[in-house]
Image (cartoon, rainbow, N blue to C red; front, side):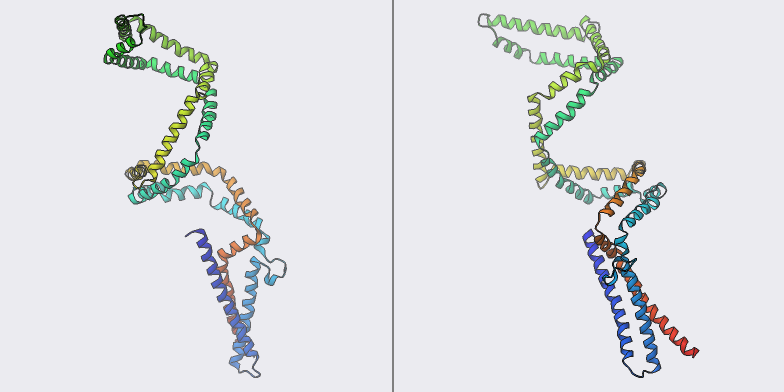
Length: 414
């Protein structure tokens, strides 16, 4: 039930209980008044008068007690009445201390979390395809608003500020040097180099005629076309021979290149923060208009495609999201070890948050302090007032029984 609905139901219960308690008090008053109107009532009617009189006194006393908790009875500023609004701040502090001592402790919270088996419940809920589809639909409803909320210019400015500042201050040169050192120590750089050389050689072989024609088309007017083609063939032969030399494990060019890669790694590590990689190249790259335009255009296209897909009746993204959620639930249901790890992670999060419970206590205290006294009193009365009205009812009944009993005792004594 929604909070507003809960409050309305509480108010209905309060009014109903208040009417019953007031009706019982009115009945006692009417009986007492009726018996007083008779000049010579019989003995049994005197018993009724005694019961009604005591019931009236008991009901009025309990009405005063219950009313004094929340307001001044009859609006009179009687001392020690209207207790809740007068001691609102102290009540808030007491509630906060109660939460701190009896709820927000490791001894209470962690065993309770463990008994709930949250991972198992979550897995079972997500494994239901209907639940997964409903959750995916709710996420899909929110995504277009989030996507439209991000302006392209804001995104560009954010990337420039965040990435630019981080990359300028980050020691990228030593990091890249260490990566190169690891690659060279393991021999991975040679495998990467061989793959690149093989690709370059295959590319030249596949496109040899096209490259020769392209060079010939760009000839000078005073150079014959045939000579241009021979020059192009010579260039391609030279490039192929260089590739073969680099590809040969015993080649001089390959040995020089491998050595230079190792030297570069050591130079980058030794350069430290003073290397120009993070201080000059990255800022220049991020400030280029072409990169900014590309980021803006790419984001705009991606955002529009996502929005169009989410608006479609059979959204692929929504289906994929529902399938992913259901798959997570099914996998989690079939993996007790993973469920145990998820429960452990949840417990760890709550355990780490426990030292911050002082902030929660201060938050509760401050929220109660900011409430208006009359409104705070009305909320409390709506929550517990219906049950307090039974004090009035019981006071009326018990008072009447006691009054009747005392009257009978006085008759026997006389």
